[in-house]
Image 1 (cartoon, protein in one colour):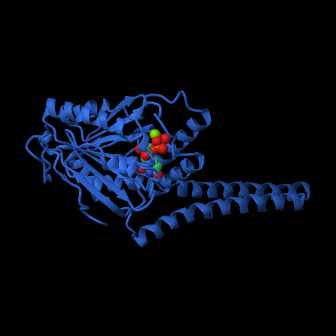
Image 2 (cartoon, helix red, strand yellow; image 1 turned 90 degrees about the horizontal axis):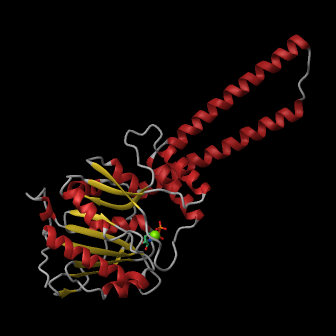
Amino acid sequence: MATATTQRTGSGPARPAEAGLSIVVPVFNEAAGLPAFHNNLVEAARRLRGARGLAVEVIYVDDGSRDETFAVAGALPAEALDVQVVSLSRNFGKEAALMAGLDHARLGAVLFMDGDGQHPPTMIDTLVGHWLDGGYDVVYTAKAHRENEPRLRRLGVRTFYGLINWGARQKIPADAGDFRLLSPRAAAALRRLPERNRFFKGLASWIGFRQMRVDYEPAERRHGSTSWNLYSLIGLSIEGLTSFSVAPLRLASLLGLLLAVVAFVFGCVILFETVFYGKSVAGYPSVIVGLMVLGGVQLIMIGVVGEYIGKILSEMKARPVYFVAEHNVKTAQDRTDSAPVRAAE
Ligand code: UDP
Ligand code: MG
């Protein structure tokens, strides 16, 4: 029944809706919930086609799943929307999977959403509405509130965004998620960013254009469990911070300055007491305390600088962010050309 046409869009079609919409879904061990998720997408695609004449495709990026995700995704019907399945050669992480999806998107606008059902598919209409009717380029969603999260986590999140936005010209909105829509020109801008250490939320905000925030309440995960734990979240935070801002380095300089001032004042006090009161300072404890503080701070700062050197090294090596092992395309006319299109890039 479908009549979807897929075309590469050059610089801006006359009507934005003609650009079409690519939906990028990174999936890692999501086999159990994928068919139900896909049904929702098909519904959404029908609505968009009916209401706005929008061509839709979905790109499932299988991020090296260890379950049947690739087989399940390959068997999903291309009803009302084209289905691409891109299978990465191993688990590269969500950021890499998002980039793989962006690279394979063939239609103009790109929408990113999780494949675990936490991002409500009915919101797609809302995001598309802001793009087509409101003329926004980046429509991002943000958690309406974080009341159900532990206090420590909220504090961590606040510290993270405080640091990353410190002195930044373009602030990254706190609480913004990866569930977002990029207009054709915003997607083109995102593709032009060359860095390998990707922090998607930050980059999508950094490019500018007309940005719009939509609050929503994420659903519970329908099955399986989140692949993030405390350590990987801390890892992502360090990754985001160091690939995005020099705040930690600035903090290091400030701390160094602070210590130097304290040491100077301490020195003056010692001098004063010795000259005017003839008091001798208890030598050993003060020296040890001073040494330990200095040693500790220096080690921390070497670690911070090391993080940045690591970033420089990985950018210098210029390795591809991901490898594609398999790539199937099903067009909505039920013509199945599922021959591998590109083996690797
Ligand atoms: N994901 C991925 N690669 C990974 C980890 C996760 O592609 O290494 C996908 C996962 O399948 C899901 C999305 O990224 O569609 C979000 O993952 P998750 O639900 O674990 O994160 P959370 O929602 O807890 O932030
Ligand atoms: Mg999730």
